[in-house]
Length: 389
Image (cartoon, rainbow, N blue to C red):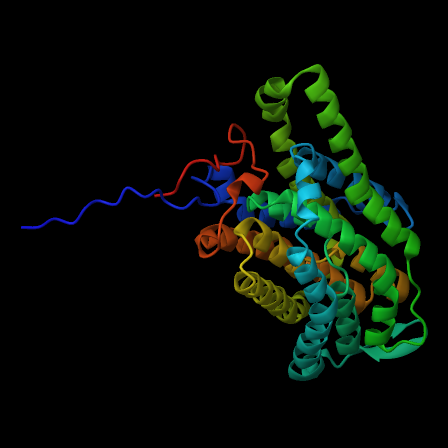
């Protein structure tokens, strides 16, 4: 009987390894932090209002501090020569820009108008006063959804790229380009889509948020990485420094969520049905944009390490800027502000789901795993060099 030869070809590299308990149930911890934040805001409303009032140009200082500690451990692990190499391959950047500015804002309008402006409109017929003008809740919620749709993510996406074992060099380039594009396009696109006579652009909020959420941790990561390599060496950096640093990123993410929902959770508690109605188009929009970008990356023959962050950046939103803009334009208790807060409520669990989808489908793409900036296997993340069987 003739036997078939046993194949000895190596398995294709995979994104990620065996999940730790913490990583496996990260969505659970996120949801628990959301509930903890809402409870904190209701039990200690004075404390929440005091912390929320600590802001500069509507940029929350407590949130900024937490986001710095979330981003710095990611930034310091990046080999920044990757960003230089990434700039020589413009396809992922062009894909992200096209999706963020030519597709995403308009699909958000379509989803919001269909669900909030038509399908759910009988449930949203109540009105509210905005700047002395009476508008329906449906239109107010649509305005908030639009503000989310025109604000591409420039901070949290570094966490999503990190968890999906993506090319963080490309992610940095795309984040930088999106930050500049948002400064130029946010106002005119928002004014057009909102069909408003005047759109008060929070330039200081946008510029300061980009500086705090991306600029400061990036500068600190570059400098400290260089200093440690020069004075302590690469081995000390990898074996000592990262061992104690890695858990800080996830801890800061969870604390950020607790603070966000302590500050804005009252809006959610007071509008439970409306939360669900607003979440439907936002959920569909996030998944739709992710999948069209992911499929486009597949058709463009991008490697997984470039396709994953392109799709994740396209799907996620800069909700800090969207919330600040909604509050400035329509007021803290407006339907538009509520819609942007719902964006935070659903985005983190949904993005974690999409990160897991990326890791499970990495074999669909060509692979260049040496591009990826990998989580430290000795800490809360799993060892990316192990292979799932």
